[in-house]
Image (cartoon, rainbow, N blue to C red; front, side, top):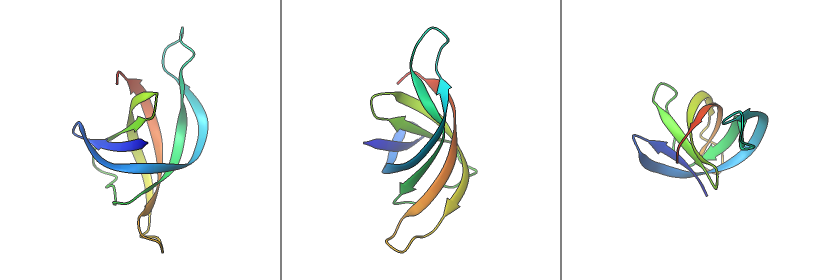
Length: 89
């Protein structure tokens, strides 16, 4: 699972919908993350607050929320975000 994190605590599980671009962690490592993502969240994240995302098997990355759409018909929200430099998990 992928998780939305705030202040070091899991806020909720999320489901990734879209991924674009690549962001590498370090020049000598082959790890990379998507640069921008779209995901579904059961709660509404506020763009002015600091969030991180835990990507399954990859670690924790700072998240800059660009847009939040919803609530959707089935409940939850669609979020478009940009990822910053990865940190240690």
